[in-house]
Image (cartoon, rainbow, N blue to C red; front, side):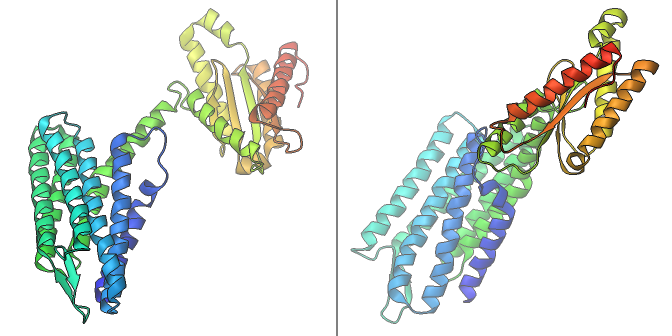
Length: 387
């Protein structure tokens, strides 16, 4: 079990560091990371075949070991092809050399598959003696030599591009090149030592390098961009894009009867147009900022969204949902106080999900919105706001 034990360790590390990446891709995912995801799945298949090979070979189960060796070489060829497709997409160089690298990946993949098929008739790739001893064939060495050359060329090419790249891209390109160099070294070791898992070690080191120096940086950058895209720059609450996305999620949950608790609180700012007209838009912006802060100060545990010029909404969660009626009372008292003493006047309305009658998110929103307009009317008329 010595050989298989390393494969087991490799697959555990592989899953731990890449689990999030290997999940179902998002619609907006770039092609390069879709290809990387496919490569990770290809490596997973290789690890599985490598683990089985160690178990079956040490157990001297020749027939099954032979079948798994076929899977072993097929998954090796596939992982190489998927790796090269990822690298070509990652480098994004529309030139002849990129096309050559891509064609070389397909060529080596095709060579591997053809030699596996021919091996059934003539053991040019591998064979087993009657006592279960594994025999490496000439085609195996040719296959590994071709892979070594390809990984080496890819690494040199990527290092050249790294020299010309910007600072952050230089780090990413260098990491990719180093991962390829590790693969080159461990392919050489695998060629010299057929009964040791050097190829798996190379795959593990390469994927760890990509994860640490490339994929995590991409994820952080993507997260920062998404965070900016979903944030209202004036009030610092979430914007209408974020609201539209979360609304779609809740629509699906409501459709599937998967919502347990959902409260929606809708807000509208009284007299914002008057402030803009009489004091200027800078004063209007301050009015919006103060109003947003007021809402967030009360609803400390729920996301707040600016869904229009002077309209806000909050989805009540956790403690805010449990204390929803007390929060409505707080907003009413603040509004009454600010009517008399100055300050942002925020009208609000709140309602909760009713599984017996709500068919969608808008049903709840409509009730909360209606209560908000009743509150707004009462505040303007000087009457007691309605709950």
